[in-house]
Image 1 (cartoon, rainbow, N blue to C red):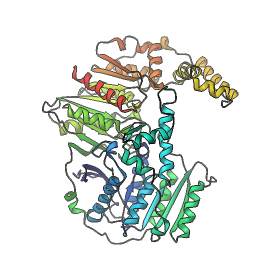
Image 2 (image 1 turned 90 degrees about the vertical axis):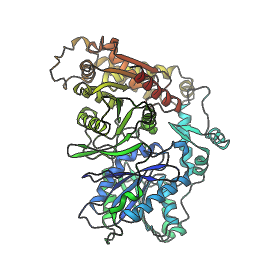
Image 3 (image 1 turned 135 degrees about the vertical axis):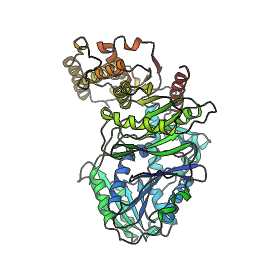
Image 4 (image 1 turned 45 degrees about the horizontal axis):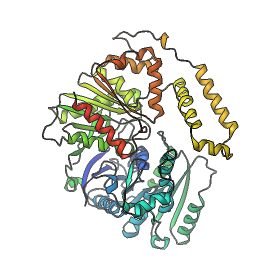
Length: 588
């Protein structure tokens, strides 16, 4: 379903071989010279999540020079149907070929593919079998699937480090996969077919890509940093085979792997400059009949949400139960590099479960995040975005009478700043709320990180083996202790705030407490046992006078999942989190 509107963005679904695929299309700007369209071959797993804002910013930059961009979420990823464990490399390749066909029939043609990280191999493979592709844009390309997959598997080993029954080697995980079992890494379940394919992925032989023009973008913290040895070798092979290869080094952060929201403006500018030199040619197709390829999908309909001069990208989940609830749910995306799918697609699976239980659900991107337009304003200024999302959910579901807001970390705090202002909001689920102060963070590090380290057998093995710098560790410890002593809590000095008084200038712990005090609805706190942000919340609420008595109210409910981490990155934790919220909703 193409979503109408005056946006530079179109959201719709395609009928894939195994289920519905969500597609996001940024057409070339009206009046710009026509240079053709590009298909995105996305990065893998959580890198797809972390790259989404950069992809959207780049797509808008390409639009301004006459290049349209199509993003198709392969089956089991992003907003498309299925679970990640349903995905396999060949199936994903077929899904992206569907996107190429769509561009040629309904978009601006497709002679270029933009591959990001592991998607660079996919882009090269697609170009190898499609003679009409003559350009590749490669962002920080991965060259060996096996080496990449090994690094991915090590995430699980690191997570299991302190567990006696934890995984100890990548070979152990590969053996489990070879025996036909799905292996779980950082919230993603990798099926045996996909795991086997990843282990043998390589760039196609250069001689089979002679007709291509390749622009290779290497991102580094320092312009003087050379490409890796593997990259240099591959570039030499490409050039020796007669491929037109340009290596473009830019300065920027490794946005595909960091846990905070990072952008690389030089990369966007360099990619736009390359595309602006492409040949101008008449439009290849007529876009008027786009909807021929689209359907309303699988009870999940993409939507664009008006928000002042901007538009927010979202997905509405229809109520699948015969006993539809009059209560709707709006999931507010967390801060950092996430978008509406959430870390390891936790918001997708959560929304589907809630919809199956009879609740209308909307997930959406805040301004400047994911595919939404506008400048990134952060959780402290998200009230306009949340109100716009609530408006659209109720417009699409007129029988919904009340709304529950769900947010994690920073978005939970943003909900506290907003919920009391909107009478339609009668409930809030706050997952590991963000109430960080410098003192609170230091206390948590001192009480939990350092004490946990001293109790860790791994720490003492490394210490006795000389693998830990004692001087550096002591300096770090002294800095933390100094912060705690310099910034003691001042809970008893907090003055009461009148109900009609602006409280935006209060320190964050007092401001969140005031938002909770003013909100008359029901509130669920969902807390992770293995999370420093949750521990900071406990430290703050124990020492702040503003929080005293608030958490004792009968309208407040708290659930602790003691083994879970911040984003519930194992399937059992993710299911426990959504089941706990659903159970709380059902007890109203």
